[in-house]
Length: 189
Image 1 (cartoon, one colour):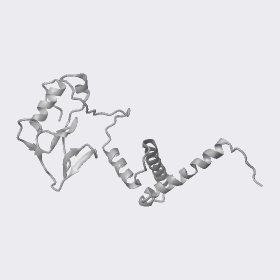
Image 2: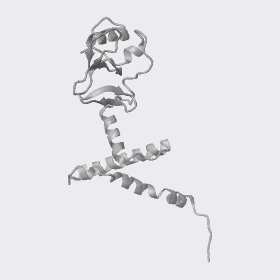
Image 3: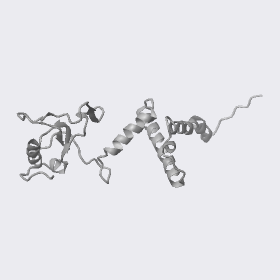
Image 4: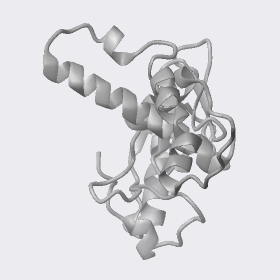
């Protein structure tokens, strides 16, 4: 004898989402769990690694659901997350410090707010790759490229923090800083 009845909403929600805990747990341990790498028996560290693992797995799952795409492998997600955390450009309020968009006009408020510092590329890197949001790897440790300023013949590894794509020598950076910030003072060292 079969009895049909309408199941309440909590039960149908449970049946629809009961695999999510297993998905998170499987992602937490794939390919290797942080707690397995961070060998310690001290309970606060064990709890901390557990919370990191769950947060990392939930972030990867939430990102894939929001984009309606297949979830990327956990190790790839972990690498990109670590790289973005190391190159974080947010201030204490969660706003981006350097915003590169349209070039700011001389002396404008946007140019003054934009951070302009003279920086050097890391070793074994070439041009800035916007697609990967990282420097392109090269075989030579200190590979120099031509300064992007028209008419300048210098070769360098330096750039302004407002635009990593544009290689700039020290002299051209000084001119760039003066033009963008509307000042005749030397840029900060």
